[in-house]
Length: 247
Length: 247
DNA sequence: CGCTAATTTGACCTGGATCAACTACGGTGG
DNA sequence: CCACCGTAGTTGATCCAGGTCAAATTAGCG
Image (cartoon, rainbow over all chains, first blue to last red; front, top):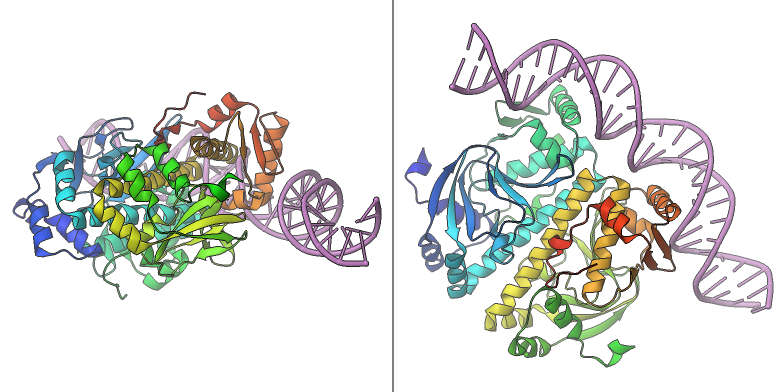
């Protein structure tokens, strides 16, 4: 596995370069951040609603999500995160968590002390701006999710989510050829889309029946890319990726 | 009207102080920002999806909202904004808009050139951090809206929205005694909650029937505060207001 | 091979959408 | 002061997307 030998901060660099450009000096500064690498099992809460966190969590491998639980077990997932993401970057300026961060799959993460991040962003305002921008893209994704929840059908919503997850992974080299990992359950999809797991299953069966997708053993294959994009009315600009992806 | 005589940047100072604290030096630096004050009529698009913006828009008076239009007139409102808010602060680092910003009521706004904002945040990293934090609170509100859309009933969702709008206004001194302005239509409420205007109306009628609220001539009166909070399962901590509000 | 979690299917139900009037109200002009 | 008009709010009737409950069936995994 490449991740065993590569520099733990490489996924972060790669992610930032998918959104923006980095100078050699900036890259070097980021690479010198102190990290504590840790392997985590699946379904593990990393930080919980109400916790005061003192580290940021950089994903090296695996999937994480942010979520909140409301009365009697109802769960809402806000976002899915993959290698290179720092899902709790906001804790740098809002240390008390107002939601949970957890692994969905087994994952490898690197913890970076807030102090080191503050020091880095103070010494390099340009890096601070890039991190800030990253949290703004995060918010842009929330807005798109709001559109999906408020004004799109279950079918279109799931189509949209699949497009988003494909693009996010493609941007860091994890997706290719209309095929990408999707290592999450239908219950996770339901909690992210605000649907019931039963209905998610029905929509997936319909998509399969239409020959639109294949979804087996944690792998999504998009067999009818144009139809999927069209159903979702997907416009990748909200992801604010640096490179325009021609598909 | 007080706003005719007071310094145009006072609402911003007041807003920031509801979230954080400002040193005298910081306050002075913010007050010296160049602004172009402008009066706008209601229902006016200030910046549109796709525009490249070169100014930030600070609200001095009135209500604004951010929204996106999807196929055939379906509209999703993401947020409501009041005096002191800079609803397009994100344009500082993501200049191409991925949504619209518009007035809901007649409003007075101050435009601040991006250049001046960049200059300010470079000279005062501490102010940059506070603005960054403000955009993070914005994202926290999006997350709460996602919970409302995904996992709450129409009744609870509207109850939650009323609590939020009351708290936001109270924090800057515009609400008091369970009574606050709500100068928006039921269609606006529908587009914010992902409901139909008809259903919003039915829920409001129910709330009135229960003696929970009064909503007349753009004024919301919360007659049963505890019940409203309870229905909404409202926990104000996601607003990250500096002062704990005891009610 | 056996256990558990995940997916799938069926039957039935309901919250909220849609469509179509109708009413109230804040201007505005005469 | 009133008649008129356009916007916003209200109500009824009907429909359907998606929820709920419960019971298989299948897939992974130790």
